Amino acid sequence: MIHFATDTEAADALHSSYNKVLAEVKKVIIGQDSVISNTLISIISGGHCLLVGVPGLAKTLLVNTISDALGLQYSRIQFTPDLMPSDIIGSEILNEQRDFKFIKGPVFANIVLADEINRTPPKTQSALLEAMQEKIVTASGISYKLPDPFFVLATQNPIEQEGTYPLPEAQLDRFMFMIQLNYPSFNDEIDIVSQTTSNITQKATAVLSAEELTYFQQLVRRVPANHNVVKYAVSIVSATRPDNELATEQTKQYITWGAGPRASQYLILGAKAHALVNGKYSPDIEDVQAVAVNVLRHRIVRNYKAEANGISEQDIINQIVKDTKWF
Image (cartoon, rainbow, N blue to C red):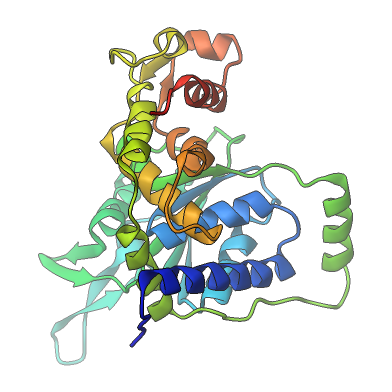
């Protein structure tokens, strides 16, 4: 049983554990520091994460390495057009006693890698919805609880549109963060090639347990957030809605649909986790700003005018954050 005398002591322990996990992951993953940090913040907050990037940027390796460093059970689901819901949640079989027995699918793990999630039809995508939101799955009218902690880390390839099925907004909204992976820097790529073409392999060692991670997730929710910080987060989200009185001119001009209340919740949870991993005991305005793009980029819908002018979701969000006053 994990116990700390005070939440301040627990926050210090989280900060220390985060740095240890970060060091282990960086043994294997070269560069991508921001991606690693944001993925860990999502996990510490108890949220699911969508990683978007072209092939070859080590998305799968990143998830596998994080699960090793956190000491969590890991499973990988390769999404394909012929994947069925039962391939994810499991199915019933007739055993030797002629009784039906439920065989658990790969979703019964602490970390589930949903690889190329947009390659499978909506029916199969929706099989993850209940699991992601309720942390249970239902088969033949019987509900089965998923392991605790439970995360879905999904990957998506942004350049191949043929043979893909765009994720519906309802499922996108289940992901706390959408994180974009970019190409490594020139020097990082030299290090990557040197490391991966030698006979020396690196592997992360578990430095955190599932019990400790669950405790730290609960700690994040206990962290106090100043009313002004909460008000600022809600103001940013409100400013993404074209028909809201707080909407900016850019919002009215370029956004068709803004973010919902879940975005405000994730902004505060993400800000709390961001504060803790950076050695602070309470989130401030900068912590909200640090997670704003990853929380909001998949929750706003640009119109054709924005696309024609080459204005991205990130451009719009950065401008909203800049224009939103804090109190």
